[in-house]
Image 1 (cartoon, rainbow, N blue to C red):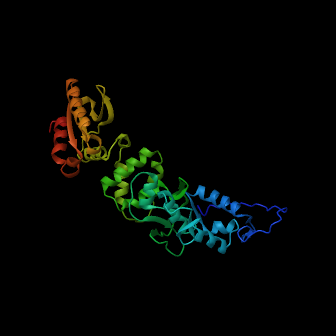
Image 2: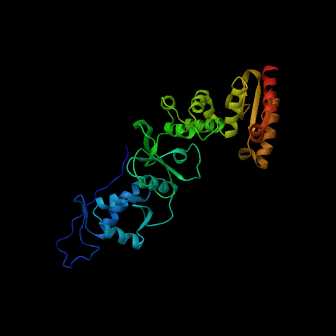
Image 3: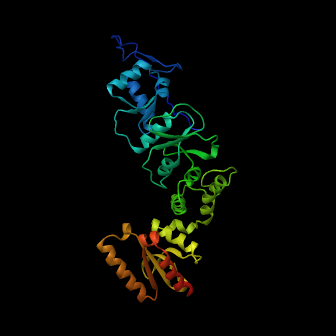
Amino acid sequence: MVGYMTTTHSVNPSRSNPNPPSRSQRFFNGSHGKSVATTDAATLAIREIAERQHGVVVRRQLIDIGLGSGLIQDRVRSGHLIRLHQGVFALGHRRQSLHSEWIAAVLASGPGAFLSHASAAHLWGVRGSRGRIEVTRTSGHGKPHGVWLHQPRMLLAEDVTTHAGIPVTSLERTVRDMAGRLDERQLERMLVEADRSGNLSWSALHAVLDRPGGWRGAGRARRVARQVDPRAAATRSPTEVDFLALCREAGLPLPQVNVTVAGRLIDFLWPSDRLIVETDSYGYHGDRPAFERDHKSTIDLTIAGYRVLRTTHLILEHDPGPFMRLVRRELLGS
C-alpha cells in the first residue's frame, strides 16, 4: 500500500553566531526527534517533499521535519503554504495542475487512499474526466471537500499502484470500476486506448474481471474484453474503433487495419476482396485540404483496382445499418 511520502531533513545551527536567533530561526523540534534549524532549511526541506508530490505537502510531513503547529500557521498566514484540504497544502501558489489536485485529494483522504474510477482513467490516459475527483480507500473517516469518495470492503495489492507519482488503482482495476458507467461502445474504446498505452495486461485484466462476486457492469466488461480484437489498438480514432465493433456485430470477416495501399494509408482493407473502407471523422478530415486529399485518394485507389467505400462518424453513430449492408453486399454478395 502507498501511504504518505515523507522526507527527513536536519540542519545543525552554527555555534559561532553571536546574535540570538529570532522565533522563526530557532530550532523546531518535531514529534519524532527530527528538526530543521532555520527558515531557509525548513523551506528547502518542504520543497524537497513538494517536488516529489506535484507541489503538495501534508501536515504530518511538516511535523516530521520539525515544524510545530504555530510555525505551520505562520507559513499559511504568509502565503507560503496554501490550504487545499484539511491538513493538505500547496507550496506557494494557488493555481494547481491537475496532477496537484489529484494527489492533494488522495493525501487528504488519508493513508491507503488511491485515485480511482474516472479520475484514474484520466491519469492513465484512457478516458477523459471533467467531474469531481474520485478516490478509493478501504477505511477511514471524514470526507475531503469536493472529493467523490468510494469505500469498498477490500482492495487487493494488485489493484493499486503508483503512476506519475500518484497512488492510483491499477489500470485493470480502473477498467472494472468504470464498466458499470459505460455502454459497450464506450467500454471498447477505453480498452483500445488502454491496450495502445502499453500499460494494460490482458491476463491481469481477465483475472480482475473474473473474480467471484457481483459488481455493476460485470457481464458487460467480461463480454467486451473477450470481444475486443488486439488489432483495434492500431486504429487512430473512435470512429475506426466503432467500425470494427460493427463488423463483429454483423458477423463480417475482420479487415486489416491502417495499412498502406498504392502509397496511401487507408483505414480498413479486405485484401482478397480488394475492398477498402475509409471512416471519415470530422476531427481528422474536417478541412479543405483533407477534403481534397480524400477525393484524390479515392481516385488513386480506384485506378489501382480497389473498391472504396466511405462513411462518417455520424452515420456509424446514428444509422449504421444501410452502410453495413452495403459492406456485406460487397464482401459476401448478399
